[in-house]
Amino acid sequence: MPHGPDIPLASKLAVLLSRKRGADGKTPSTRAIAAATAETPGGKPAMTHQVVNDLLNGIKTNPSTSQLLGLARAFDCPVAYLLPGYNGLTSLSVYEEQQDAREALRLVHDLGQAGVAELLEAAREIRARHGRSDLTVPEVPEPQPSVAEPPRPGRRRRLSFTEAAERAVSDLEGT
Figure 1: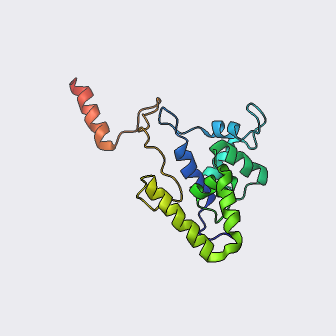
Figure 2 (figure 1 turned 60 degrees about the vertical axis):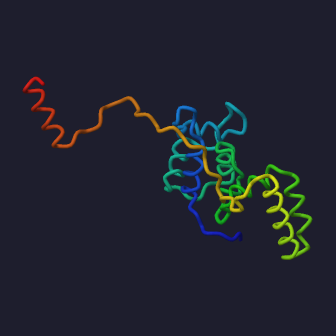
Figure 3 (figure 1 turned 90 degrees about the vertical axis):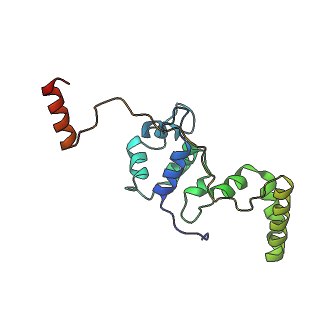
């Protein structure tokens, strides 16, 4: 079992959802997420929008393997990140996307703690050479700053009792 706190799946999905904001600053709907879980564009989704909603709200906490694969496709993340105990989205993404990173790990596999320490020191030196003075990389990369979500059309918000009374007086007085 991997080390790390047990972050609930709903919390991980909330982080991934916040990273999926569109150009308009809005997060995708549960129907759009469900459609993105399909193996092929336009294909049969791995789950319904209601299942997506239940997972996002923490009502359903144990999705099937096919649903986990679908969520990983929809959120463009490693499927391992959605499993309990695997919280390092940054390192899992590098492991999954970079063949050389996997090779580096295989090469230090039998060298023990000393080999890992040397690899870590070399990585810190490389970051310094590339002008990355910050040696702490977050487990989950920070999403790009998003634009504030504009109000959605629909009913006006409910007024407080005081606001309603002030509006009624204003309407009666004709001001």
